[in-house]
Amino acid sequence: MTRSILGAAAMAALLGLAWPVAAQPADCHRGALDDAYCDEDRDLVADPPRDPARLRDPSTLVFAYTPVEDPALYASQFRPFTDYLSQCTGKRVVYFQVTSNAAQVEAMRSGRLHIAGFSTGPTAFAVNLAGAVPFAVKGNAQEYESYRVAVLVRADSPFQSLADLKGRRVAHTSATSNSGNLAPRAFFPEHGLVPDQDYRVVYSGGHDRSVMGVNAGDYDAAPVASDVFNRMVQRGQVRRENFRIIWQSDPFPTSSFAHAHDLKPELAQRIRQCFFDFRFPEAMQRDLGGNDRFWPATYLKDWAPVRQVADAAGAPYTRANFDAEARREEEAAARRAAQRQQQQQQQQQQAPAARPQQ
Image (cartoon, rainbow, N blue to C red; front, top):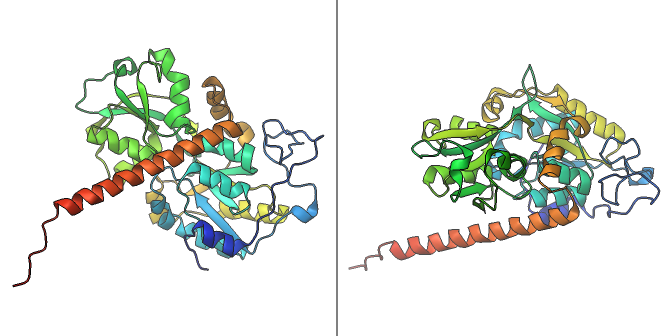
């Protein structure tokens, strides 16, 4: 079935009006969840709506993957899976190319997104604010994939430890990123380095941008997700020998795969089974770090270390923190657009004038 990349207007036209996000009964247990959701079974994720009329069985399923790297990369990498998912569910599946974590969370909250791969940190925002129900992570035959926070410096730099980065330019990715911001804020102080105090945090806007910035000398160091760095090396975007890792953390789970809480239970179960039965073709294995399957996972158990880091960093997954991150992402996108426009203008000015015809 057809798979496409949709803008917001086209998505709205395709899906029609989404269900309004309505508050649930005041007497329900919700924990850290938004008022739109209940969690009576205490598994930390939204229960299906109590009213059967609010359960959805859409004819078209919309899938998106985290914009932790260039979103266009994943549009083709996930095509074998979305084609399979269409056959497995008997429904049309389209790929929604998101440009920010905030946009991805809002798309699920509004009902425009049914299935998504959320990066590690924003998974918690998706759970608390958008009713996402994580159920899988990528993995291989032995275990599911994990990553470490890796602090990269250039191989030719003098830096040997975190304490050496005092007064330097250190790139974090985005405020909600577990590996790119929250974990460093939780872990660095015990190693003699306090973000925003011992160095000025510069938000790069993404793990790939942090890696490329260190490579180019724009930043002295950057904490990034090790799996992203490894994929960039495998794709030939950077050379491993140009970097050194001066510190790394214990493992964290990688991106979660989640479905909307208000899908009909039989559809949600079918989607989960389709994920678990799928085996990545060779090209997809190569693009996704050698992983070949999806492993079962739960937010309650597998995201416990991520929640602990957020608590330690004083950055709970609340609506206020989400809104602040959304503003930062919008500002970063505007800055990048302005830089691109400036570069284009400079290139036009430097281009030789056309020679007049004789």
